[in-house]
Image (spheres, one colour):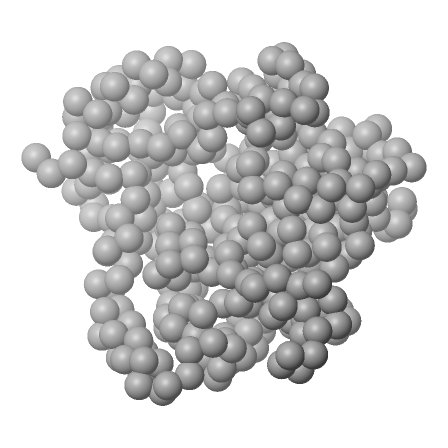
Length: 364
């Protein structure tokens, strides 16, 4: 019996193998490998696909986050509201700039609980970072309203939500900047590291282009102390190929999620829900189980792999001990960390593989 992995990146490659190989060869033969035609073309195409005016490619998703707060001028003494149950990179985007994360508990959809935001706003609050976790969507009308009321910046972490939408509007387009990762496991995944920001503000886009390229608009003429964070030509080219098929790839994930939701029936498991008026891309299908360790071991015996996204919330990580939080500081966040489990889901997953996962979960 073949082991069912939590994710299979090779299946996505083989779906469009010839297109990927043709593009890679074309880039290699072009003789131009950094900030060329492929990057500029991808930036135009991805911005249009998202419904945004500008896109700037960068080295990875973490760079997109910390650079976003840098160009917005958020730093020491400033506070940024962010949900507690996110990947630690979201928080690093804030703290790399010297700003302070203010954690917010999640709602039943794994997203930032917008009913808890206003009470946490202080004179030091400068921004809200919304993380569209697992490809779902936060209640963005509430967030936008608060940002307008208190004159706050709004940054969206869309590392897992390429193409998800709230009331018909795609994630990443609600605030000042939308930050994306193209890590290979993402719905729009590259064949290595990559990232980007989208924005409707021309000056923000221009500032990001300067920051990503050593702080220079013109080679050897440096306006600021910048960084080296550029989306590679070959990755941009491969992303352009995948972007052409992204709608159908996302729809395949929605069909897999629908099948799981329809056929998994076990009172020991809590299944994920999609918020009304939203369109999730189901980057992960995340169940909850109070007996998670036993479930993981049971599925491993059945030759089924799983991943925990994420076992340690940022406020309890060693990296953020200096913030002074203790276990019990955010009970809902911590409960999720103890219970969540991502079951296998990937483009190219067969019906037989999914049936095996469903049958195993129902028999647990």
